Structure formats: structure tokens, C-alpha cells
Image 1 (spheres, helix red, strand yellow):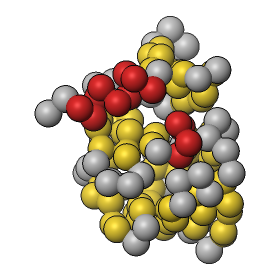
Image 2 (image 1 turned 30 degrees about the vertical axis):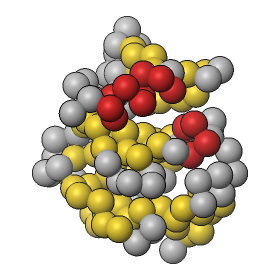
Image 3 (image 1 turned 120 degrees about the vertical axis):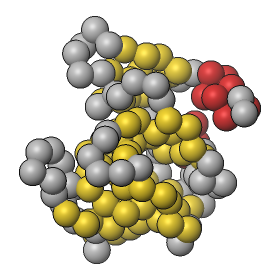
Image 4 (image 1 turned 90 degrees about the vertical axis):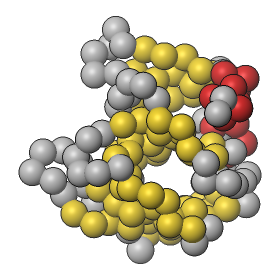
Length: 138
């Protein structure tokens, strides 16, 4: 298992085809990304554990972002094989929100999350208040 300390909330990380244990220093949390397999098309997929709580579905071994002092995690996710979605997960509660559109890339730009779809024209920008609003809507 590859062990990595993540000390900031603005870098996008790429984790694939191995087992990873991520120590999120700002959130005081541990995230494990455990390799399962590789589909016939695309990246590897993994089980996800947040502080030893198993997260439902699977995460794709590709881009991960831990914005806003590592309060959230953004990644590619699927409930069932192989329907890819983009999910935002609250690290402390494991509550999650699935975005309506799939975004394969995301990064922090100033204090905003830029999400980019399959084409460069498909973009969504979220700030902290818009992410918090997603979680307040029932």
C-alpha cells in the first residue's frame, strides 16, 4: 500500500492501479483507495474507505481533489459498474452529492473548484457556498 500525506487543499491528485492510504492532514482523516480491477475501457476502479468507513459504490483511479481545508473530496464514482459520475463527499460524515453531469477533470483556481467535462466547453465552477448549498438541499 502506498502511503501519502496530503498537506494542502488545492492540488489535484491522481491515484490509480494500486492501493493508497492518504493521510489528510488538514481534515485529520485517513482515506484508503483499494484497487479492485480495471474494466475493458478506462481507468482502474477501487473501494473507498474514509476513516475505516466503507463508502458505497466504487471510485475510479483517476483525479481526486480535497478542497476547502479537506472538508470535501471530489472524484469519479460509480454506484454500479461502469456508469461514471462525479461525486462530492463530505469527509467527516461520508454524505455525498452526485453532480448531474460527469466531469473528468477538476482543479482549484483561486478559491473556486473548476470542473471540466468531456469537452473543454463543458465547465462548472463551484465556490464554497455553492458546495455547502448542495449539501443543505434535501
